[in-house]
Image (cartoon, helix red, strand yellow):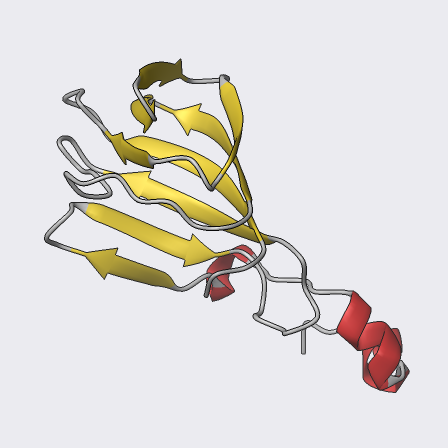
Amino acid sequence: MDVRVSYLIEDDEVQKNVDFVKKENIKYIESRDSNTKMALLTVSHAEKTMEPILYEIGPGGESGRNSYSHSGEEFIYITQGELEVYINDTVYKLKEGDSLYFKSNQQHRFKNSSKKETKAIWVVSPPGF
């Protein structure tokens, strides 16, 4: 068994405040229409105020041709590849190691215009899933 003894005896309050997910337990949701895969990097709980997501965006993959907006904030960090993020009338061309923060109430969308897969850590607040 790959579990610490303290994990088995901790009270529920502590377990509610700590969320440990091993790599092999990450589950992907795939959208073939948009050539994207995403994985929630935490177990979903109503108490959370942010939601980290791992995105894998294939060549030509996008969030959609139409921009959208919603309440909250977003943060993107590119771990591999390139990504174009459209916010209002501005295009931000992110490369590996680049990051972007924005208020989500602005019209936004993303697209991988390259010929290689892009991977990004995306943090959304408040959680949407």
